Length: 229
Image (cartoon, rainbow, N blue to C red; front, side):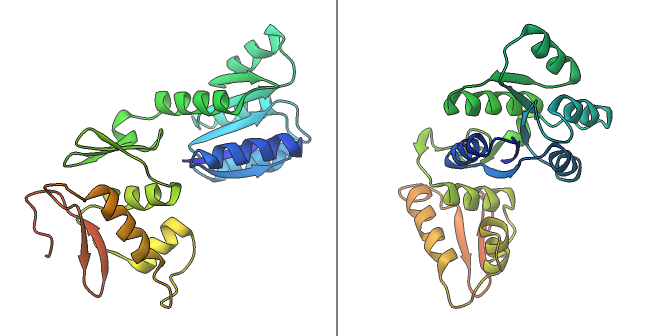
């Protein structure tokens, strides 16, 4: 999940960014309302954490203008004040939820997950191949009903493979998507992570999902379909 954080207090912004990243989210963080508004308009974020009081454009103006442009990205407003009028104004402007400061990181994450789940079609949140189920919002993975513990990078790699099932992904494609850099032929980073995934996903499974296409890359193949085409 790709999240935009717009918060002018750098210590709070850093706290939010670190907390969301620890939950496996990718975070863009800015401290100015005008910059935040431009990013919110130009990038397809999965959610926005937005302070109300900002230098430049304020949070209420940002969410109101996004809604006028038919941009329905989920938004949580942060406020240092707790007056009912301000909460009502924020929700009326189009925010999905609000959270007064100070707050616990677990609560912010839970609220963010909840509004993203409500705003997204269920089928876009859940991916399934055979008995492997992936929830892209909660980042939970199960196979045959058994919960599988993955690191953030392992989850991103598995989700990319499953999203592209039956399609061969080269090491370069995987590096650019999962690690955001071009593949270095001198490193076996992708192969190491594929090996880790196989140990967690395919060990003891009746059907092996992750297949190697020699000299090309890797792909996920559902049951009853040929691994090599």
